[in-house]
Image 1 (tube, one colour):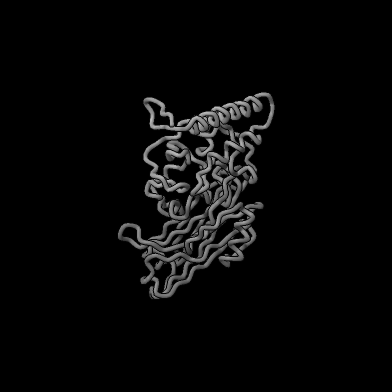
Image 2 (cartoon, helix red, strand yellow):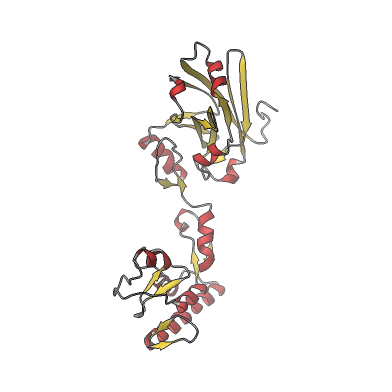
Length: 309
């Protein structure tokens, strides 16, 4: 067993020869890319397999650890396994696999969302950062009535919302939606059924709910766009609620479903209706909430530019 002075990495002569071979392979793959070849070669795939953690199967990033027998593991799984090698059960210690970390620096890999449309090739240590913000990454289900871990592209999520969450689907860019609730004073945190509107060939989610804003109970309506942030900025919308000779209007830009329902709600980016005003809109004796929310969606730059044109 040989030790590198000044480091915590140790490996056998066989490991040294293998590491040198890996470095040559990775360099060859990188040269091929520069000559017009594909960055994703069988050589790179061999190294890619070595960089997979044997426990979680995710790619490993520094610090990469190894046991005295050369078996590698990611830092997250090392903690979970109480410092024992999952392959030979030897104590791991704090031996870094610096050679594998160095090999990773020479790799260029495709985005994990390649099959969803991303064509980028990235250095190994830049790949993870890109994937966190890749515009082709799957969207989370926008349904707010219950926790849902489903992800997918927009067509898949539209069918998922319809089939699994029984969400109402409507065609058109203008709408009138009624919300009725008995005993409204007992409602402190309530989410009404999500509604989807098909407009300009795209989908928009209308949310309406009740919650406490500091000490005051309020109702809130807002729109989210089923697409990315740049696309959402191409549209505007307005919401209006009224009754009993009163009217409240909101106009804004729909938020992308990249922003969670909770994030949009907590930013108060929508039509806010204090409960006292909502009851005034409802009329009657205050025993039942009756709100009609009217809205419209338009493309920015169109001749028709909303209520405040």
